[in-house]
Amino acid sequence: MIKNRNNIDCVIPAAGLSSRMGCWKLTLPYKENTILEQSITNALSFCSRVILVVGHREEELIRQYKDHKYVTIVRNVDYHSGMFSSLQLGIEEVASEFFYISHGDMPCITTWIYKTLWKHRVTGTLFPGDKQSTGHPVLIHTASFNALKDKGGYQSMKAIIQQGKVAYLGLNDLAIHLDVDTPEAYQNLLESTQSKY
Image 1 (cartoon, rainbow, N blue to C red):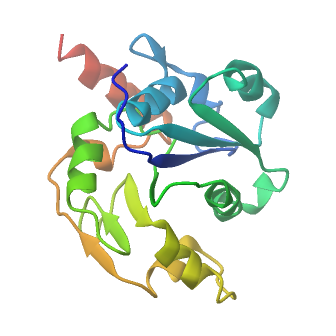
Image 2 (cartoon, rainbow, N blue to C red):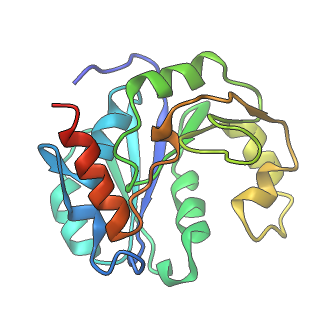
């Protein structure tokens, strides 16, 4: 694994129920890993640390990652309330000037995407896609975000972010939109992987 010398955290929420999939998607096989393992590996190809927020079936993830040098586990006992609660908890652990938000079910995000966002970072929030289809990972300036968040009264990440500076890279890469939410999406992921070899 190539370790970047920069100190950059990446928050990955992995607390959900996978209700649309019909089974727990994070442990489904992908390449030589699981979907979640690949998503974490991709983030750590550029970031210095992954802050992994767990909830549903947390014991399995805690057991798997508790000794991982570059993964910090955060428990969300209120994960049923939705992803915003997981993101809030994860962001509280951020210790870097900027941080990424990615997702545990997006295993195709390459190092190049992380690097490109970093190269174009702004004092605010930078999305890899466009305004209509923003994509992930998202790169956020920590101090700017916290200043907005501390005003209070926000019910979503979007509501906080939109109060500050927001920029879009307009990357033409399917990986920034490819999340594995349904059995059809998982099958398409496997087929696209097989077609490359």
